[in-house]
Image 1 (cartoon, rainbow, N blue to C red):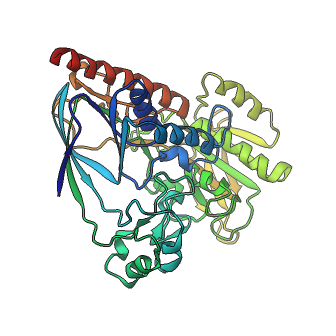
Image 2 (image 1 turned 180 degrees about the vertical axis):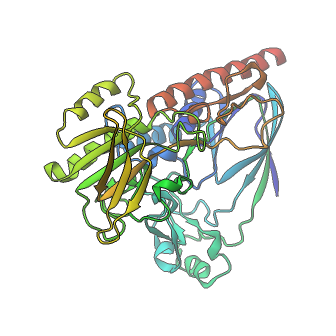
Image 3 (image 1 turned 90 degrees about the vertical axis):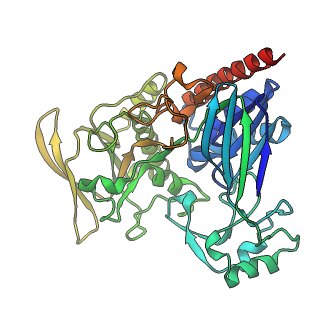
Length: 428
């Protein structure tokens, strides 16, 4: 089935994270028609996976709730979830976009009552929690999911579980006959805001993420702290569930490295500084944090935060690129080996838990954009005249924190508005 929607007066926003939401809302509130595509079953992106974010250590649900309220109230935005762009052709003011929409197997009758989730038995790794927990084969992506509508995992389609989900629904919302759809759009400008993904920590072999249970990533730490997360808000060792009292944070895990990501991921230093406050929040004086770093890149108001963390006597800083990690098989602890580059002393420091400040990898795909689109060596979309009416927003344009990502997305929206305004002027 193929459907054609939109006109060249429309702005397409690809990605429903904080940057995509911001760009779509800013354009729509200026009176422009916007189509917002999100690959996942719900919008919210990486921000929805955080426990707190800078600069005020706010709970993300606050900021997302405001954006959702604006989204629901604006008739200029058409949101299509589970949608992926497969091809872009054309030029500034006249782009033809091919879109593939995956079946949700749940229609708009859904009230999110949860009966289908209770009925099914199959469980899968929970993507929202980075596989730290399980979810059912019929599920909401998170408690902040929007659209607030269940989705059936395609792996249960054709099984007894799928029929159980359908039989349990009182509202005739489960539709097992849904099929993938093809959609064609004609738009004047494209804002690409597909965000970032955590660099694969298993590729950093000396740190043993794929070998040692008690090596985790900073994004997994965020999910642990969430009261609705896989551990109920408790920081714990994956190996035995014990409270870690001596935690190491390793900076530039996959960033600023010619073997991995060459760029600075910008958020990693801030993330680890923030997460030392989590340790303090949960354990008080009982636990200690040690940050192993090349240099601390804390900018603007974040530098003041850095100074406050440095004043905490339970937080230590070791200027060093950790060479490797080995495990103490008797205790499950981890031994970090390296050289302190301030005193040039070798160390073999033992910790209960290691948190990798993992790099930010661009989600910009290959093979979708028109030939000649300026994408740099780090796979971010450059702001370049060669791109015509295609603009990167947020972490599709650079490694950015939440504050800068929203500012960048607003700028992208203004540029896209200028494009469709020019088109309207030419046609008028």
